[in-house]
Length: 192
Image (cartoon, rainbow, N blue to C red):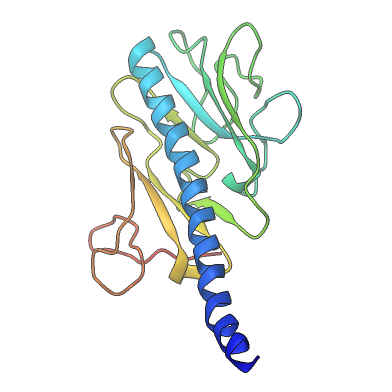
């Protein structure tokens, strides 16, 4: 009986870590897939695409005052981006300035629901805090999205969105066991 208790004491923390790692990988991969979809569509269509934090309503909309990407997100093609655009990093409104995905105007590519409770996915600066714009050649929305869970900074991972719109995972460039945000010199990922 005591042998079983010892084995359980060793296995349970390892199993918990395995579950957190799998959850983190699934959530990071979902955001990477959305960013890659948006970039591919921007190149293919020759127009701007938008990834924004969703308001969580049944009809998709960019959230006006989101807490973070863990609330879920939508991906759409900005139907009026060829003309004068009002979409900016300071405003989650689309091309006609009404702040919503417009049925018949914008092609909705994807809706992603909220991440699990206890998980955060936050941008490290205003460029990626609530929306990411991608166009054929570049993006004004570059920075790092930080994924955190109950492990804090030690279990954090990040997605770096480059000025060209390419998304890649962060790595531990200085070998200290904590992921770095891609800056030079490297800064550690921190969690809220």
